[in-house]
Length: 249
Image (cartoon, rainbow, N blue to C red; front, side, top):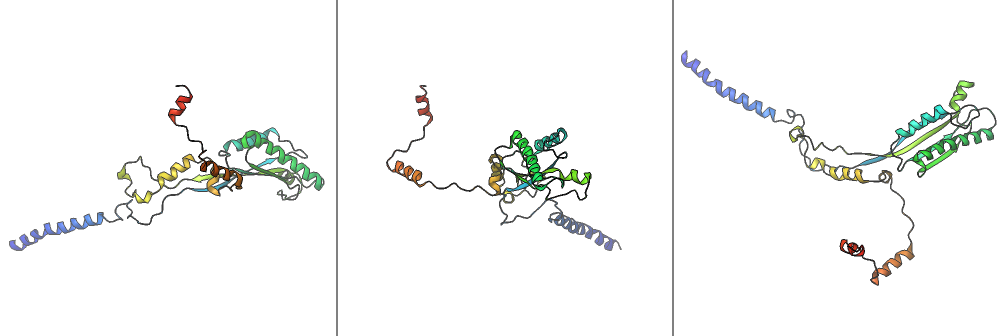
């Protein structure tokens, strides 16, 4: 009896060792390490994305009036102040009127309303961007019902500001301790620094949305530049020493 008990007790350390090895192996599986991701050889580099984001606003007007009253003016100013920088923005301003009076009169009234709103854009720094106005008169009603409640909604100027905006790639927080980002593999973040540097230096995000059309070629100018090069008449860049001599230092 004692020998059998001793044999059973002798098996306990072996069983414990097998159990311990099993637990260690289980702990090393990807499921057990929450942030672990196996490396991938074909991960694409990080890139910026850019698109036009629309911002909209409506200015209301009194009956037969094209002037912006104080309440609507303050609302429009708040809207403009909340917009991103206007570089590359595209503004569409559409004037409307209610169904009363004649079609020609309403078209003129809606056009004057749109021009007054456009003037406020110019005064707030939007004079050098693409801005167009249009007049629809009473042709596009939104009131839904006849009477003052519906007419008030039709007396309006609709504004759409398309602002080019850049979306940064999903890059890691390099300031965080490395042991908190087990999946932060080198190749998985390929191109992050280049993308972030480009976003910080680009002057007009619209260039990333669609680019700009090239100006027409000037053959005479280009031929003259080549001739200056062939005849060694190209001006050399001035170095620091030459700048000092020119300044008399």
